[in-house]
Amino acid sequence: MGLKRIDHKDLGQLTYHQVKELIVRKALRPGAHIRQDEMAQQLGVSRTPLLKALNLLERDLLVEFIPRRGYFVKQYTYAEMREVFQVREVLEGLAARLAAAHITPHETAYLRGLFAPFQGTAPIDAAAYESADQAFHRQIAAIGANTVLAKLEVMRNVQVLAYQMGLHLSPEQTLADHAAIIDALEQRDGVTAEQLMREHIHAGTRMIEQHLAEGQP
Amino acid sequence: MGLKRIDHKDLGQLTYHQVKELIVRKALRPGAHIRQDEMAQQLGVSRTPLLKALNLLERDLLVEFIPRRGYFVKQYTYAEMREVFQVREVLEGLAARLAAAHITPHETAYLRGLFAPFQGTAPIDAAAYESADQAFHRQIAAIGANTVLAKLEVMRNVQVLAYQMGLHLSPEQTLADHAAIIDALEQRDGVTAEQLMREHIHAGTRMIEQHLAEGQP
DNA sequence: TATTCAGCGATTGTATACAATCGACAAGAG
DNA sequence: CTCTTGTCGATTGTATACAATCGCTGAATA
Image (cartoon, rainbow over all chains, first blue to last red; front, side, top):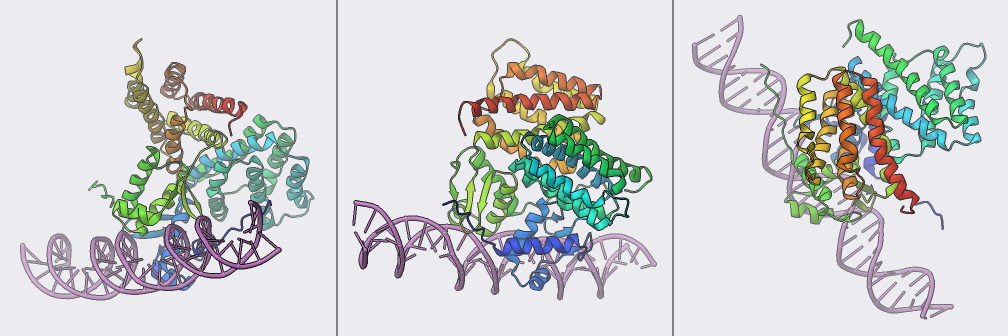
């Protein structure tokens, strides 16, 4: 009873994770054409599971598909990043509102704990802060417990790319945001939590718009 | 110059549309296991493009994939529909806000025209009103012109299923909503348009929650 | 009779072969 | 010299063959 069905890992899944890693780590150049035969051979699988993986990556907005041409590593412009942020803004806002409805004290403690290492006056390790930030958003989405929203986790992959493009605010700027959001969640104030989360992400959007105003595509 | 690239239709795309039609028209029973060999043969294609189609349908939340078992026509419970509506609420709200930013008089006229046939006192053709409703939401998303949002058109397919489950408000209840949203768009008042759109869809969410309160899963 | 488990047919998972077509380069026309 | 067009290698699109395994059925056991 209560046995969790073991999730069979087919090659499509494994390949998906492998290629995603390659893209996120920039081992594959943005804009690069992904040659199926070559890539399949390098991964030690046939084209069939690779194609399945590429389909999933297309859904994740990490690759682009052009019929009769193939799959290409998505290369984001600032304009496209803004679109992603606009969508993230409302989705993460929703996640926060839902999370507020049934967050537990244990979970709020976890969220606070994520940022505890950065409270002092010591200089902040950027990489460590980035993971904490990711975990923060991921966890709130998880608490929200909306399976549809979870499938749109999509955005989280792109978030990594956004960081690489320098599209993120400094820890100093965001620590207060995070604390305020956690407070609202703790008080089960969904409306405020949603609003704060939206403003938090909107700050990122504004940063992108600044780049755009300066002339970058 | 200005020639639009012809979009090659591979069998995967065609198969995708065919199967989507079968699901939406309930020619395939919800919950049914889709036998790949049989389905491929009936469509006159091999399993390869069918698999591609099924992957796309999974992204659209119309089928569910279980490794080593296969693809199943998604069967929505009221609880799941609520999740979909919660997401639609914020996404369509965003679409409305974006649309307000650069809607043209021609486009507002088109939107108003959609509902013109239903303005009189004559009884309303439910099917015709449903299409108008769909077109209304689709057009606003199109005006919004956010490609990421467009890819999440996902929700629009599920909307058809929602109608079939009886999850829609009467024309009498929604005509005023639509008019108010169009007014806000016309005045380029994105904040109001977003708020109105969210409330509009939230009314649907409340209806689902009523079903849930009455005990349906 | 209820339960387990082996065997088998049905179905998915993966590899591979072949067809379609794209893009690059070179030859020829203007 | 530039532009068009034909040819060919490379790459994607599709079909199909075969391997893995799922779950059902029925016999064996308690």
